[in-house]
Image (cartoon, rainbow, N blue to C red):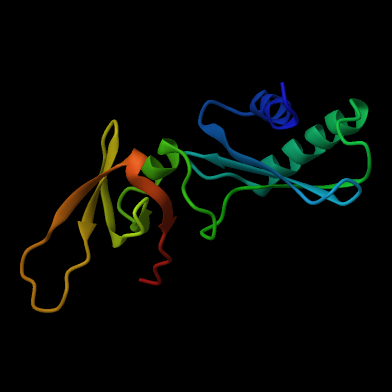
Length: 153
């Protein structure tokens, strides 16, 4: 088991059924490493929950000497600047604006309308003069990066 898998297991043991690990990122070089743990929830994640996970994880890492030297730990929910990685995140964002870059470099913007087993359904933003709404389906395997768009409406 590698360090990321071990950390994932420790964090998942602290989560409720509606909470999930999005990503574990270890950055930097030995002596100046930063561990970033991104956790999310179907209902939203509280600061208190992140703090509790951070405290428990920090104790585990130090007790088991996971890192040989000093490290920085950050536990948070992924913000709008983090791409969607898990199907569960897409489900949470149905009805919101989304920008998808496909594996071939095509960029698609629209409203995430539906989620199917293997693909997402996007209602494309209408161009001026267009009268009908166009929907497309994009398989998860074709998505390189998906970002939720900020809306100030």
